[in-house]
Length: 161
Image 1 (cartoon, rainbow, N blue to C red):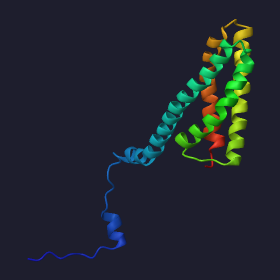
Image 2: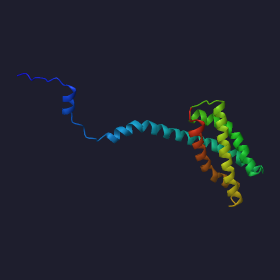
Image 3: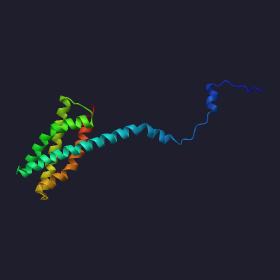
Image 4: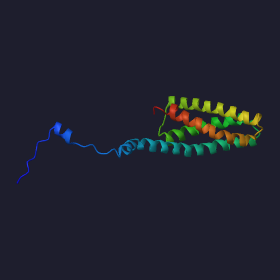
């Protein structure tokens, strides 16, 4: 005997459909956001790696100038100025995959001016009020500079790029 197949319409489909248990609801939502998270983690990792290279270069310039008896704030300013162009190309191309332009370069310089002012203030406090050595004082200022630099680069300088 042949089984008769009923035509399915919207109403029968809706009435006969049993929803699946929501076991994977959170998992499905997480799958959707995973690329954003992993790309952000990769971006931060590239920033830290390139930033490490930039920091070594900048600190080497700073330490060399201190050895030459240049005052620590002048040494910091010179090291920052010398590092800006190197950092613009390395951070822009290797981290944010951007060649930038005149506007981006202007923002980059402004961001580094902010980083320099905060760094110089912190260095001044560490040396004048807490009697830190200029080498150690600047080494202690690096993490603060990295955080401020990341925030400015990621959310302002290269935001629309």
